[in-house]
Image (tube, rainbow, N blue to C red; front, top):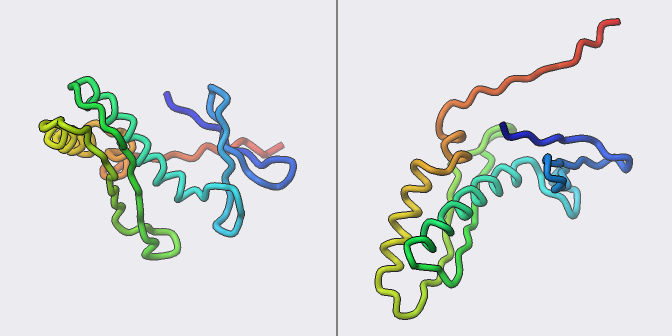
Amino acid sequence: MASVRVERTDDGGFVATNGRGARVAVGGSGDDGVFTPVELLLAALGGCEIVTVEPLTSERGHRLVRLAATVEAEKVAPTRLGAITVTYDVELPDGDEDAARVFTDVAHRVHDNHCTVGRALRETTPTEQVLPDLAR
């Protein structure tokens, strides 16, 4: 099971912490030095694709010189995103004539089938809210 705890900090900010102790500051669009929840969603999608594409291309003998992605979405309503676009920035190794084909094939398969975050966004993923029993 994947799990992250998000909590308010003593200074009034918010932080997300995973079970391995990694922390990410979370806040609103007017807060400096933090990710907004929407930016974290975009980072999750880009991260999921990149960390899956990298080992699959390398295992096939085509380690890319540069592998990055920009993930963008426009808010089309106050609580709704439009289409999310993942734009890759890749530098192929010199003299590797098959690297472009391997990268393209792997990137398509990852996007369509192997990125858990992307699949969760494209398919209906149920969400559930559990509130504490505050009646005393």
